Image 1 (tube, rainbow, N blue to C red):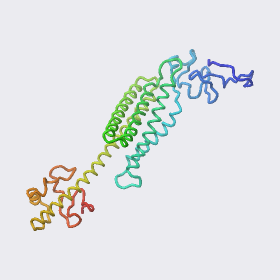
Image 2: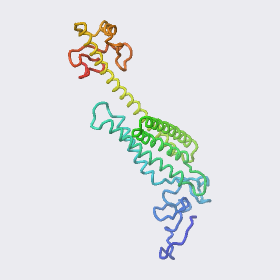
Image 3: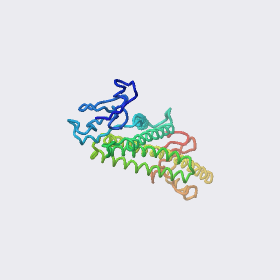
Image 4: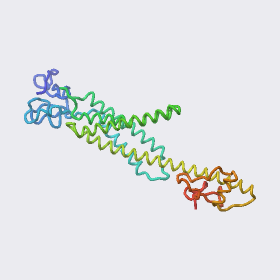
Length: 325
């Protein structure tokens, strides 16, 4: 049964308050409130300390002694980790369903919100799992029954934490050191993610209490897939913007070359055909026939002469002063 000590005088019959002086067999701390009893032997525990499938009292009738190693107490960081994880999930969902175009919330603001959500959720998860692993272990020795799941959550927290920290440092450091810091952050995050996946799979197979490992496996899959999708779509969006700027630069270059050609030849060309491309190249007005960025060789046919603006338009990217008609 649980160990008892004498308490202060006046506390209950004979000067002993049995509730306040009973030590929890799991954490060896006094049970002062929020108590729970083993349904078999009536040993008093903290509500969060009683193992779901066992009891620490050897010989407790009806409970296999193998379950006495069970220990599922969670520290105070976990409620914060759960709430902040939901915030991170909401930001990720908002980014994924966000349509292209102009918005009240800019892409930069949403990116900052994602970074902050990753920072706080990752930090809370890391410290919650670390606290469990270091301070909340079975008092009679042995490892936690959800050891792989706990270690996996610690690795997941590190993976989420390293990206915004590394990216933030990379933005304030000089260019060379900044790029190196961001690269290191991505490497650390990738290795930590792989570690979390390995612990989750091992925990699902070998942990005595595998629920934490199974939950981790689902979270890692969801977060990794979502962040990969965001990275790919963000890269495509930025590449499209770069192609648009390059196309506008090509239009200005071609318009200037045609203007110089027309002044030198005292002519007026209204159609940009193969003959004019050849004349511009052979006359030294262009070093090469420009391609429409993103469309490869042979896409120079996208460029056409127009009467307004710079005198040029692209059938894919529009004119420098407005969309193509």
